[in-house]
Image (cartoon, rainbow over all chains, first blue to last red; front, top):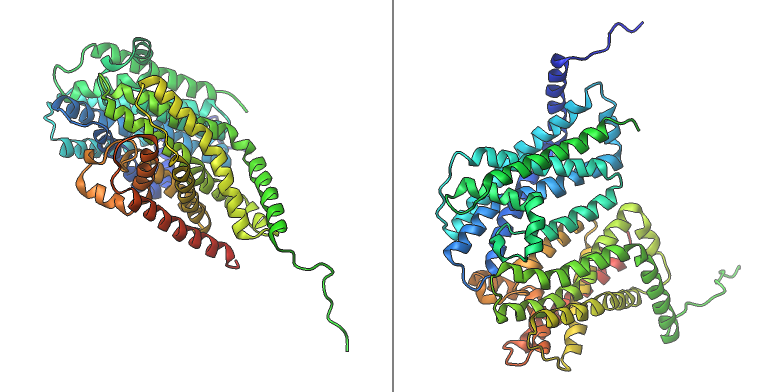
Length: 255
Length: 260
């Protein structure tokens, strides 16, 4: 006879979240230093690299590149590393195993979100420090930086995770992730002003998450450089909800 | 006393045999690249046409010199993409899924196989290179000046890149390490070697480091063949590229000749 009844309720959910956090951390613990290093290299490396493309780095350019560095560090984490890890979990079968655990799937997804957000923050901060050291830009950080950085980490992870779950073929996902990063890094106004874009591309970026991530982080690091910060926050919240919605839709279905 | 059993056929060699093997391996490589066609096309278009068009967004008004550097640097990236980046990843996949040993067991000499692969790299690199050049010319109207030196420049740049990729693919037995190194190389070629921008825009020490690596020299020889005007250090660049080619070819062929 099975003694237990059906387990549910907020208390059980929180306990599951704690267990899943420990489980997930135990799984990726050995990769954490490498992920932080890769992420710092991507963020800081990109920030240094953009500088090489300009014949003269004016103070305005230096400021744009420096304040774009944190966004450059977050995008690869959410849009490449997280989908890549989900892809290899699917190939190895770990993904199905985790779903079979007696923890609510929403707790499992939340654990992944929290863990990756935490892992993402040191690399993001390091990328900013390296860029500040290289370009000697004067920043004026404000308390807005905290919600901005957290929301950006969350939006990158939520959208990346939602995509990784919704697109079932890991090879297709891999191709999309790599193409996306290339397009984002080249055609997004993250390290240069949006006024340099053609009108239609700017219009597209106002509804996509990448430019808005750069706007809110820049708003937290400088004063008076960007406008329409509230709109950007709203767009990012919308993308976070969409990413979580896609996640919820996939994990709410049976195979 | 019994006679030793001699296999009925003799060992085949000679130019006719080499030509036959070369053709077979060329077909083989082209056919096995078929499933990679989508990836290859996407990578070449994004890195070529994408970069040519995207770079102008970095500037309010792009200076002619910056446009010229990108227009003459992107062809180098198109040329090396198959041999240096895609090739090693292909071999890494073969090692992971076990077909690598099977391919090595085929009765084709190592150098003929390498020559066939080099031909494939030329086929996969030269057309995108010219597409990027045409797009750059249409977009920026840059003063390109195509000279006959483009032929040795293409031949040697592609050969050095292919042999470097060949050495990475065959001399490093860990597929994971090969993948990591090639991904780092992409990063280096785009941002940390003076291929897409002039060397004076990077720190002096980084330029010096780049002298020892082939990418700067690939850009020098290709740029010299695409533009008019003086190109200092051209002979040195050809020599350095030649040295890298010989070194990498030697490493790769030695690794392939070793018994597992």
